[in-house]
Length: 359
Ligand code: XIL
Image (cartoon, rainbow, N blue to C red):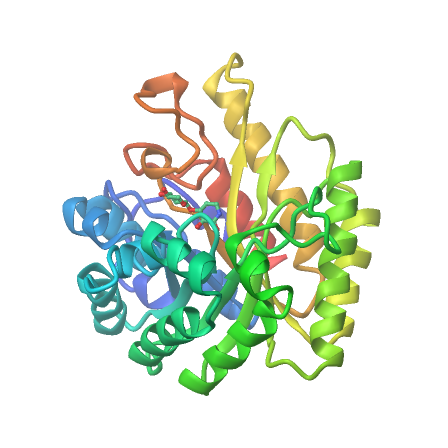
């Protein structure tokens, strides 16, 4: 029986687990994405919340079946870890790390600095005092706490803004208070606190052929070049890869040179938040799932051609938990941009990832 024939719905056979085919939600068999990735020297992972894993045995099973790496979807963001200056709430992040350890999974830390998850008290303090110690203390505490558990950190998340006035850098509280050096300083602080962790900058909207994304790609490469030239501790680049069916075809001629430039700087690349925004939900579920799977296959076939791409992480496993869902959406109104549907049945996107990882 060839590998492809083993995908989905074949009778479970003892012993296959040893070959990497775990048992997913409903007793049907789903090929392990992690096993496929590992076979090619890569990893597969997903973003998770420990409360969702604990509440949903099927999710837990899918995570264990498919993942070698976990990213905390929210638990390691600043507003989750330190909602007030004198209030630390590391419980969920610690819980996720314990779950990972207990199951032999690795952890990507996400994210030390992000304009959207900086708690209000910290933003106010940074804006008022312009003193690096607010950020420095935070990075030291968090990167230090998880120094033996987080293998790779998104140190700065989303620093690029195509409308930004300064070199395509986002006009956030860090820029306003410290200037563009905040990025290098954050990387240095993370290196000091967690010397073994690999350090990354993570950002979005680099995939498609349009003028905004072209500006973003150029600004990003320029930032990376500057950091490397200055000897800043930067090991890796995170490409979020929130794909979008309304944005036109993915083009190898756009993506490949972009990846090659990053690789040429000696940086590793991680696909960190893969999912697909469908937009148009009028077609049949079958057609919608086929479109999503095709987009993912096309994207991964292009990016996995680059040896520096070390792993793929999806931003969740089940449509039920996707950040792309509109509030209250149910049934066919749900966006179907993750490998499993809302009841944890694998979809064609799962098969597409598996095939691309092995291609
Ligand atoms: C999102 C989470 O999925 C949501 O649950 C949360 O409310 C907001 O953040 N880019 C990122 C992620 O880097 O951290 C975001 O995650 C999605 C976009």
